[in-house]
Amino acid sequence: MTMIKIHNKSSKPDNIVLKEHQTIEKILGIEASLPSFMADYFLYLKGAVSLATRHAYLIDIRFFFTYLLEESPLTKARTLKEISLEEIDGISARDVNYFIGDYCARYYRAHGDQLTVYENHNRALSRKKSSLTSLFRFLYRNEMIHKNIVEGFNPIKLPKPQPEAIKRLYVEEMYRLVEVVSRGIGLSETELKYWEKTKKRDKAILLLFITYGLRLKELQELNLSSFNFKRREFTIYRKRGKESTMPLNESISKVIKEYLDLERPRDALEEDALFLSLQKKRMTERSIRILVKKYTAIAMDQPRKDGYSPHKLRATAASTLIEFGFSIYDVQNLLDHENVTTTQLYAAHKKNAKQDIIAHFELDRQEED
Image (cartoon, rainbow, N blue to C red; front, side):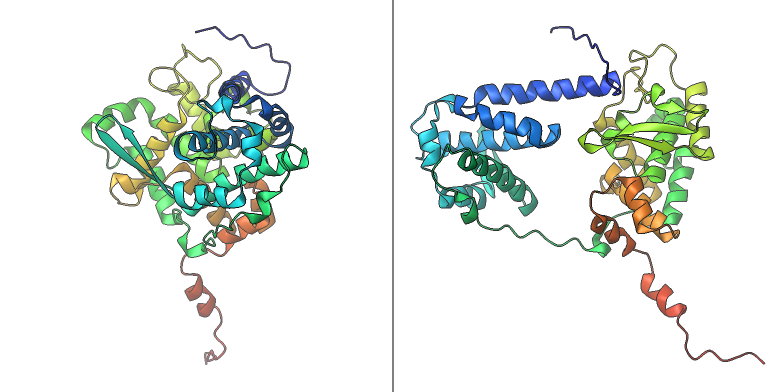
């Protein structure tokens, strides 16, 4: 494996630059497997969408081309690279609708003696439709194909988000969560041995999630250099590469300093990484997800499999802040919601909201003598 040296003159930390480099390597690998006539489209994606979206689109497009190769009569090519522009020009909206609506909804893969069934819900199908819409719209606009077949793509109905379906911790469960991680409540004997070594780290992680509503990626990428305790602030990198400065309150400053002073290894293998595993490396997104699921399951008195994800702690932060009286627009800004309608969903989701409204609307109160 080639050693990578980072010569970084941007404001981004080295770990984020490295992570982006790894994603770009995956993108280049996918692009290398696809036909050469796609080069202009690759260039278009590079400037038009975020790195993560670019990667996701290319995964979907490679999947579609693999389908053309292995499951359809629409190409005579033997490899992905041999698929011709003329064959793509011959594809109709009906062909794409069949791919998305019939094939992608449920398909099968044989792995030795085992047959795996892959089933996609409408949200996944909608993303595949978006990827192919982007491709065919570009090819037509670039005068590479003769028909604009995008208008013929079938609509995919997505369920409207319902406020009552939002999963989050309620205030009493949040206090319980802090108690669980602080005292090791509900952990097995084996888990308690690990908890003794990581309890301050785990508490800092959970409090950052429920205080700021951070995304998993934003928390996992945090560094020591992200924090300026003198200025009482820290820096995170949002979606689409946006840099954002967040204020530090007393409780968050305290738990992070306790972790740094009393628990974080001095001989870390990744010197600037904030949250370290017992192997002294930066924690992975998977390990943080497992940690959150474990503690939230105990806090809610639920089986471990029913514990919450970091994203549900983000929902917890949004709902709680609105419940405490902060404006929708302030919460939108804190959580980096692109559209305020996303934040409004959390505003509508209050425990016992109906009871509270009626209890405060007594029109026929009797005056006390």
